[in-house]
Amino acid sequence: MMLRKVLQRSTSTRAWTSRFKSTFAVADDGDLFNPFEVQSGCLQPGLPASEFQERRTKLFATMPDNSALITNAAEVKYMTHDIPWEFHQNSNFMYLTGLEEPDAHAVLLKSQGTCSFVLFVRPRDPHSEQWDGARIGLDGAKDKYLADDAFQLTNLSPGMNKLLSGVDKIFVLKPDGGRYSPSFVDATKGFHNKFFAGDFLVEQLRAVKSENELNRMRFAADIGAQGFIDMMKNTRPGMSELALGSTFEGSIKKNGALWNAFPNVVGSGSNAAVIHYLSKRDLLGENDLVLVDSGCEVGGGYVSDITRTWPVGGKLSSGQITMYEFVLDVQKKCLEHLRNMIEAKEPITLNELHDYSVDIMMLRMLDLGVLKNKGGPNSRHAIREFQKYNPTHIGHYLGMDTHDTPHVSRGAPLVPGMVVTIEPGIYLPKNDFDLPEEFRGIGIRIEDDVVITESGIEITTSKVPKGLQAMEALRFE
Image (cartoon, rainbow, N blue to C red; front, side, top):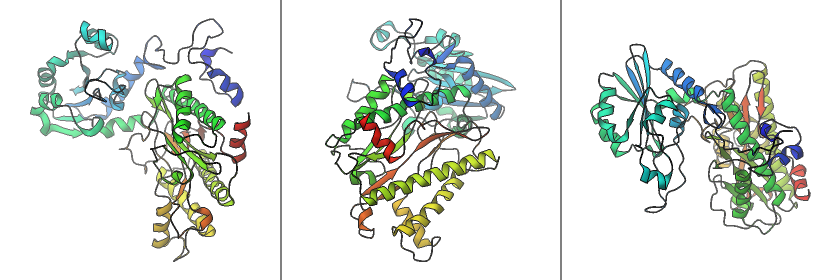
């Protein structure tokens, strides 16, 4: 089989795993397979320039006449005064342009039925490019990125004045961190009274993925899945939580990801009951469960998001087993319910799926004595008590961001092309003496990435085992 067909899916974990022995593996035809390669005609791996053009066309269709939309690239961030962090592009800017340069601005103009796309970019500078790499310049903005016009950043103020004069509405997208650069604020100061929030216009498009986007997300899911399998194989009592998380990071980078999609959560023992536990300073105990929530980002900016909870040494208490099987059963039922609704062409939202999961969980938690039956399962007391141990939602949208398209309501119907996570969990603090003793200090979450299709659902992270015995068996392969 050709290594270039690495995106093809396989039902065999062993066969699939063997295809990721090296990031730059030699293919059958003697060529090198480079997962970061940008193919001819593409602006990002697997994403042709025409796709970005189609996105802008769809966006123009949602904008009123005589309006503009502005999105800003991310800025370079620094660890210290002259040491930069690795650059990560603003997702909305990347979605509309495909450009990874910092400090740029994109303006989409719609006037009297005419639509134009304009870029503001850094000027070419041999000295800066010797230190930091090539810049696209004005010619690259127009020839490669298909801008109708382009300005240098040194002309930001006169350029904005030229483009925005006479425009009735200006939709502005929120930058990373929520703060606009001083240069942008100054360059647009005469138009602030025409500014409107425009994030929803773009996010409603981002929420429904094209087949090219889904392929990038499948790639991220496959790489992330292998990262979890590698962690499970290498879990040992006495290793640090940080070391276990590093196993994931090494695996995903070896297999073609850029970096973690977010700081990974690795919590052993009672640390697993802390939903976003990030310190990772403890050692894995022989009788612990360890919860890992992690994912990876691949070229083009698409991510995966996976959570598994598994035994460190295989010696679990009856309370740990009971709670694990409970959460796993909830996830299976939620996935089945979602599949059935989509297959039947019945509308369903993430909020409705969440309510479905809460009903299942509350009844079982009452049976187990985790919740006290005061006023029945639908009483205010029971709901408050439930939220104490499960304050999270059943899932979120997934795409270029881990918590993708935040302005798209979880009350919106799920449609083909959307990608969501399904992640029930339970978090029982070790010092909560209202809990039965056998359940104290247990935290469990199980999360998969799910594509909504025309005929049902596709679980892109299904290669990662979830059964206790299956996960334990990986340590002995």
